Image 1 (cartoon, one colour):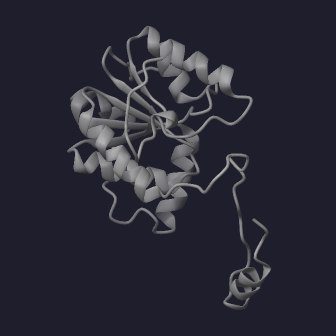
Image 2 (tube, rainbow, N blue to C red):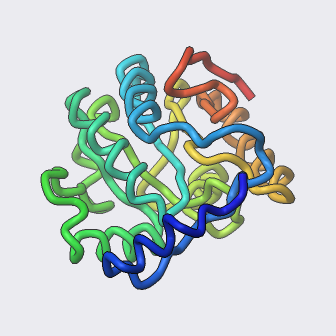
Length: 197
């Protein structure tokens, strides 16, 4: 659809200085789904999962961090954050008051004290980046966090075109460890279904 110039001009008159947009998935037909729908789907998935759960997202998606934290709280789980860029983004969001009302996150050092069925890990690596937390955990190279058969990894971000091979490498490593994998293709927020990769 064409840009509605009048609405931008009106926003400028109200004091908005800049608009920052995201073009990820701009080539996908239709409208972007609601974060509220994703939040409902995430809670449904977390409710079903046994053992440890990891959710990998774009680090800048503060709305998704909030959705994961709320889903974890509803299921009596605590949330840990793994990945430098996530820590930076969360620090900024906290300074801006965007995470008010969200329970404190568990430190990586304290993860070992939580039973697997009481934790959710939000981690970097949704695009298969070799040095990101998820890829390291999937390879068994991350000190302090290990996935066990029956644990679940939720990819809560669509693949950016060109990253499919790297993402599939991570999925293959997870699959070799008998980890449940849930992807956006599984329509979290609508009819949920599992994908074993």
